[in-house]
Image (cartoon, rainbow, N blue to C red; front, side, top):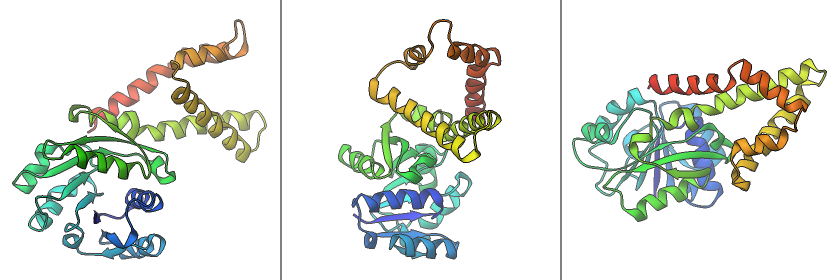
Length: 260
């Protein structure tokens, strides 16, 4: 299989790095297109892939990743549509660009897989929502999910939930980073060094997330395990609730979806 990417920014490089690192596709079978030559050269040197400034060259691959902003999809597809074959799998990652939009831009049916990755893919710990259209076979969808496994995990969802995934996993790393930063600020206030505060707080969030995933217990049950009757932790929970912690999170997620 040949893999092409149109756009070679941080997310594209994280995806390619994971795929290559897991041995899923050889570097010589990958070509990345971008107008920013220094970025292309950096990708070529670090990943060993082929690079070009011609989007049409990348669009000739068996799987084509479109790693550009939503507003550029129409013009880029207009540019490449005549070289994209019927068997090409078109892998998108843009909010608000539906299967109907993609087919309208191409002027025909096309194999397409909508995805919504997140920045933890840069350290091989991403989670990516995946929705294949009707033209994509079960085997082809499985293959795309295997590629996604190179930089994290894949979660298949219906297209109607794709935009709702943005606050759930696409934008939410920003919220998680803010939470870690706020915890670290509190730790610094108590006398910890900034560096140690970040390590303690980040590892605590990482370990807590692993408990949710690996124990299968409800987050509320895990919270209750920390909150001894009449203890310190329940006072922390009370203060967070007093300042609308849960509501702030849900309101932020809602406004995120409305902005799409």
